[in-house]
View 1 (cartoon, one colour):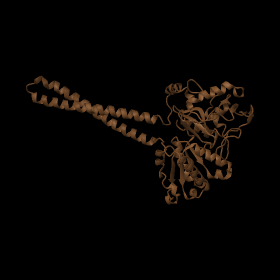
View 2: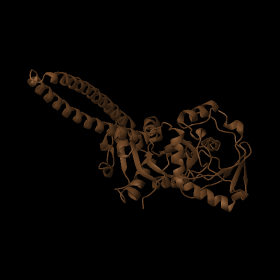
View 3: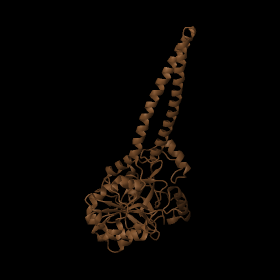
View 4: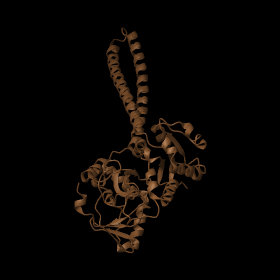
Length: 412
């Protein structure tokens, strides 16, 4: 059975190096990787209990990326992180989990502890993306461009050959009327036709091969790109995967990055990348049913205070929803998966959590019901306030909701 991790990579660095690490985080995150952001300043302010949070994050991270600078090598927290990962996880299963060393441009590898000098070193972001299995969309697009250009050249040669063949056939038909006088010329024309037909067959074979290559390449980049598909195609895919909120999706089910960015910016809401100085939705929470549910007077929504005990893939969410509705948690049987807009109302300002203390922070990455494309769903991270779209085959937590969201809060 394959191990399921909450994070693809844990970045270990000194808080003073945040400007160095931020571009690395952005590159990894934009290529679909789930990243745990380890901030040393949070650890200093959090006290001893926070180490257990970091240790849990290390256990749930598939790989560890150590950003090496003079400051990080002198950090006791960074040392504790890479020694813990090395001793408890990397040594035990090197075939599955990797400890990657990323030295800054002015860092001397000789400053590393001896046991880290034999660890795999990546000096560029591109090497990191390749090692971590991220999709290099730019390379795929470049290859498609090359294939399309070559295909156009083959089509042009084919058209010229076909035109020339038609002309030669017409000449042959005319010249054969006087066979005796044109016998030699007739032979030469037939030879030319024979040669051209062979060239034409070869061109057709090459053309079919290039068309197949172009088709496969386009299918590859289309499966992981950020462009929204036609609604009819999306309906077929979603129906086959037994989606949660509706039996058929309409145009409103697609929330492109442009739409969500506009929604956030128009309201001045906080976003980890788009608006780091933004504000938060004003909640008025009330706990009910022995603290198992939380009602927000402002949004008119009722939430689970915790949610699923473990992560699950998107196609398995319906089973969890059915069980909660069957138990009638909080006296309700209309629990559902929240939209990305509804999840956004739960974000609050905090040091190492971005959700109210009315809620359990264990459910760090939460599924929404909003599609970014046919194969990617919007998720939100309550441990750091991140908002990203993730593959439907991935695994995240679920926090259900019921009630009708205030209409004025949904208007763009």
